[in-house]
Image: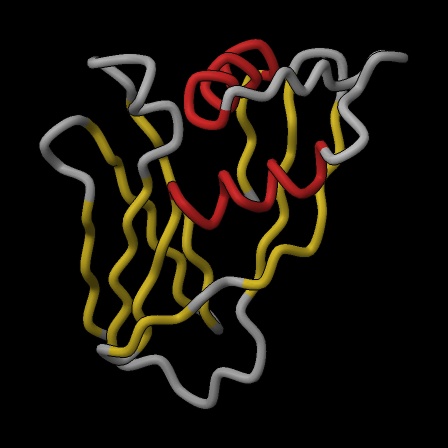
Length: 124
């Protein structure tokens, strides 16, 4: 799951796709879900065991200040290696930092992504 401040997320989506989402309002774009999914797929990626793996978009929800975007990978037999790319909001801020927490069985890893350091790799 990804937690992003709504105002920054909307600005990033509008810059990338030219669409004003207006989340959590009566003027919310009718196709907001499609653009949220498209954005997540463009700016977050992962490889499992050296193979490109497309996390499935499960949905999203908003609270008063943030959007939560849910993605998951199903039917993974055994993870030997994971590579993650996270570029949320990098099209807006040169000093953007993203933290990704990865849980697999009893292993929890945290990664910090920033400009020039957009990829992390772990071997289990």
